[in-house]
Length: 154
Image (cartoon, rainbow, N blue to C red; front, side, top):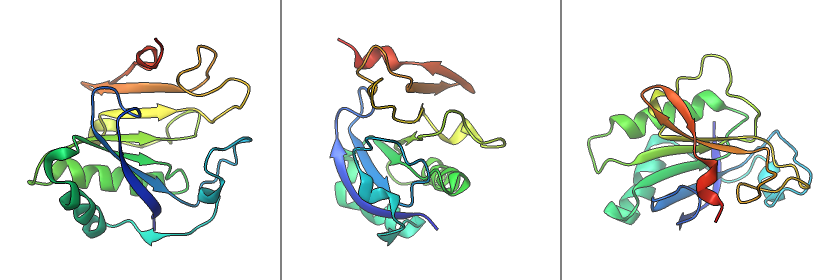
């Protein structure tokens, strides 16, 4: 079961979206220099369809995107919740996932995602704003992953 520790409305994680970013705990990646080491532990509240609906209800139509920040310990649970978000009849939102893995797990269906970030954080390469980063943000369009990392550089 996925657990989340906190959430917030953010404007910089997904370009052109008002994003409800949900931090998921129990991260297996152990990236050196991790900005959120508390997410290494299996802590927080259960992230279920009900809790997700409650979070979205709190923000109404203000959030245009939900981004799962982590979840690499249970990627198919992230996919299941992404499917739920895509199929719900309430206010539609786009779905993003920030994964610290180099690639998606075999069998993961990207049709429920609009954005996916891949790549572990490597301290000396920096995050998405760095021209040296190994991380990539993709927009999923018609089943293809299009690299839009350039959108983070000015």
